[in-house]
Length: 422
Ligand SMILES: [Ca+2]
Ligand SMILES: [Ca+2]
Ligand SMILES: [Ca+2]
Ligand SMILES: [Ca+2]
Image 1 (cartoon, helix red, strand yellow):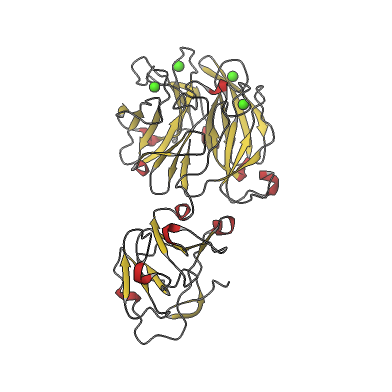
Image 2 (cartoon, rainbow, N blue to C red):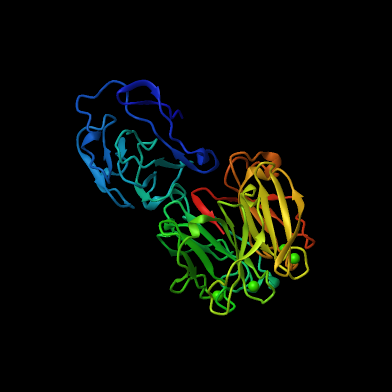
């Protein structure tokens, strides 16, 4: 079916806003608009901002349906919608069955948010029987969060990459609209809370409050304050505590590391933007951070990803992984007590990867910490080892326990609509 059409008032000028991932999912984004011939009474302008409006004619004339929330059934509008304008801030998903079901090989028709009202069109079929309005594209045909499934692993238990302390590594992910989700590792997800777009650095790994439960540290963009969110041991968090009164906007690559100083308390690493120095902020008995110590005299601005995978070399000391964007090389810095050893090259081609993720010993029950990465648009079949190319494929790199990782492979999940995974 052809999705190409024209914008009102711009005959012959095609406009596409289809999402790149449409081809990878059952979803289809329609940006089609009415026929070039101007209707006598074009009414899309009558649709108020904040609403999804629908008409029973191709020309968007006559009676107008106006909704601002999902409709599992459509009553008199069932199978009657021929034109739509989505002036809400949400994605509009059209289904050919009631209660958001599809049948007959029909996928979900999606219309992107268009509060300005510059586009109108249809859902791609005249048989729409329910409409969902959702904040992110992926919610048209599934949960708001990606599928994170790892095997039950007796050695996973602990407070590294394990917020709920059970036998599966877990992840946190923030979606585009700022909701933070806890992914316990069995494919499900639980909402931690909204509002996390106020933070422009998020990190975890290790326990900072000395209760054996993993915590989260976040930087507030508007203030440069650093906040500690104490883990409750269930994937939720207690009242946040200020651990950095300000000035943290001068830092980048803020990374909860595990224990580097050897006192069994988790420490924090960060790079000073102005100088390229790498600093260690030691965890203390009170859950605050002690006086910082210089770890790297300079040059750390040449790294664009710091990741703390825990101990990957098997000596019991946490290690650091960093990517050099100018070369795409991945480097490992072995942890020593209070310092990092000279770097060791562990991979190339890592510029095709966006987010790097540590998940502890997530698989194989081997006590070896594993590593994950999410591809960016540069990823090819050789990057992913699979047919998943381009952005948002989650790749799994099993740890060998000696500081190296096996060849990565796609785990089958797609992480679009996410702005942080940690
Ligand atoms: Ca804790
Ligand atoms: Ca420490
Ligand atoms: Ca180590
Ligand atoms: Ca493992």
